[in-house]
Amino acid sequence: VRFDTYVVNTILLLFLQRVLLLVASDVDALCACKILQALFQCDHVQYTLVPVSGWQELETAFLEHKDQFKYFVLINCGANVDLLEILQPEEDTFFFVCDSHRPINVVNVYNETQIKLLVKPDDDLDVPAYDDIFRDEEEEEEESEAESDGSEPSDKRRRFEEEVIERTMKRRQRREWEARRCSAMVMFDLAWMMSKDLNDMLWWAIVGLTDQWVQDKITQMKYVTDIGILQRHVSRHNHRNEDEENSLSIDCMRIAFEYDLRLALYQHWSLYESLCNTSYTSANLKLWSVQGQKRLQEFLADMGLPLKQVKQKFNSMDISLKENLKEMIEESASKFGMKDLRVQTFSIHFGFKNKFLASDIVYATASLMESIEKEGPETTNFIKALDSLSRGNLDKLHQGLDLAKKQLRAIQQTVASCICTNLVISQGPFLYCSLMEGTPDVRLFSKPVSLCLLSKYLLKSFVCSTKNKRCKLLPLIMAAPMDVEQGTVIMVGIPPETESSDKKNFFGRAFEKAAESTNSRTLHNHFDMSIIELKTEDRSKFLDALISLLS
Image (cartoon, rainbow, N blue to C red; front, side, top):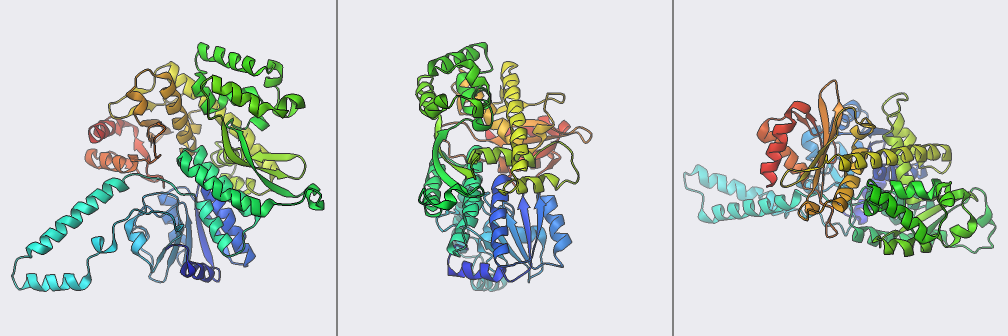
């Protein structure tokens, strides 16, 4: 179902009912959720919010609430499986699905009664035509009558069926890949079409898109295109005369387009720490080696920045140095082979003092969501992360920024240790790296978003460090201990780190096939199909099956 009058009417109908919101644990989903919550509050809609981190929790939540609710909204979950088969709902139950995961299951696309997919009009779902999958019932009845008369199926029918099978197989091969769309942007579009879009909603859409870029889920081209779309909305919402009274209001909020540095959290850290713990600079300068540390000193000297200034908090740096800092860094970076150190993004100002880049919010929110510090029930982290997106909760946001710094340091230290001890090995069709129990910060990497971020950073750094040209083109599978008592590991597969990469991920289907062929005890519980859990003793046969499958 695309955005047209029908969907707007459907959504308006939705606003009259009690609704259950099922929201996945990722930043884009949280942002989409915030936009929808704001829309619900506009119309005084009653809703219940339930965080779900995987298929098991989704099924449990549905079973617990199916008697009280008839309308379910699923954010970043549910599109890539046959929902009706999994949940077995009553016929008067309806699902509105806004999911960035691809490919979308064809049954969900063509079930227009109970499942409403919230999809932008320009989204190519790449699904077979309806007639290719679901044969005309009358035709089938005629054929079954002909067969009951004892006659052989006609050649025409056999040829038709062979063609359908061939077409569907080709489709399936294409559909084994997974590419992303931003759910927060879809929700913002919905708000805009209903003339209920606010500046806060626009900011959440920006953070949702930035999350997909930070997580490397979308191509640079897709990112730049979507930034252009959002920039038009930013101009519409944030134009004002400088002498207006509200421009100096202490609680005003202003979004601005920025061509800023690709340095993680640098405005809330020291420039030195940020350079050391940003994947792009760390990989390009090879900071895990003595030679790399030397290059960093040369890079700082080339900019003419005193070490004392670079190592203190960014806020405390001399204003004279900060004035042309971006240009100085960009000029020196291009001499050191870092031509893409600046990136199109947005910043937000709260009142006089607080300024954040969209990526700052992404790192902070993701760190709060996957915090390993135990505080109350499972949902505490989700609620904290959701709250940190509201402008009234700056204390939670700052807490998230502190956690994000720890996470980025842990990732860089782990990357350095993996490369220096040659833990990344080529297994033929893919690279493989496994973290051992007892590795520092290993508990952090039992969480899916943190493990994915570590894997992306590791692959970038490995590609910069290896001289083997073939290895530079390979995808990576990374494993980390999940639950020591139960003897399980969490495993993630990520696509190759090449400039031409379309960021599509084929590991989901490959993991399923390898598990089936070896009877490995796996748990495919994550909404992202390229993440699985596996019994430690089944790991070697599972990997062997993957090697033969992908060779």
